[in-house]
Length: 381
Image (cartoon, rainbow, N blue to C red):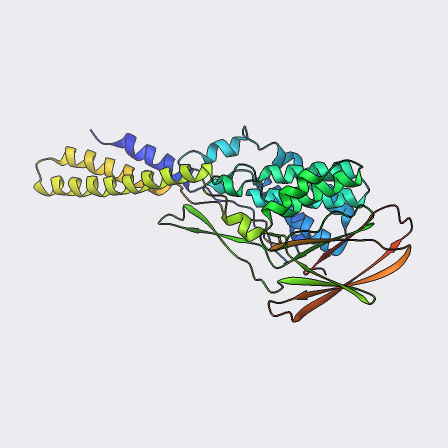
């Protein structure tokens, strides 16, 4: 008798574990160009990741209508938390990588999708929808392992309350929560008469990497950070601002993910089968060397080979796909200005207060009773 069944199963497992993507994409470095190409020709499971990247680029180029279209595709996908997605189910198995499931992002990435949509709703004068987005964004951060850091974004609560105050209701509870979560600077009291809402972002957001023997542990490192604070200049007036939220802090204070336990178990299984496979193959060779147990040696050796292939086919690698053009810091200012055209200069400052780059935003106020939303990023094109 020969272990034909073992070899057949081994080949099947090897084929399942070593399937590769055949689509080859050529990247230009432009998130919008690359995103359109990837959505058309790349794997559907990466669609949300590319739309996220296109949104950030569009916001910085003033392509707000495009950003809305992409966000309105992203939010139903991440809001549904696709528990029944077939790729997500496969990724929980031993022989499929976590990166094979549909990308929805880590909580800080999902937060930013809702945050940007809230900014755009405010820009369109839809304060109730803007508030709903800020609340949904905070909800994405509500299930941290360490409850100290659950739903602790300062700006999300602050903007929720500001929208509420603008709508004629009481936003004081939201303001108190924002004050309680403030780490660097407490946001100012609401000024409902303000008619210019300035949303600011700077620095480069957290980046993912994997550690561990089988790259099964998801970790974060800070992006390249230059600006640490902001100075708004409007005519003779100036307004110093600091960051209210830090996405690197948010990424690293959530604790473990449910999938981390799955990956840890996969890593243990991979290690164990590798060791057992080595032992079985050595035993098979030892039996074969005696010349009296050839059939037993073949069976034991075949089982060892099978176990080694099972180990090789087990994929414990963490998913490091990411929304790679997020900012690190978020800030906000509310101003009251008369009708007319205004030029706002935004100085992004390093830790010593030196100006690194200045961005100019020109906007016109026609009706002072309606809010004008200004979005300025250190990465504005």
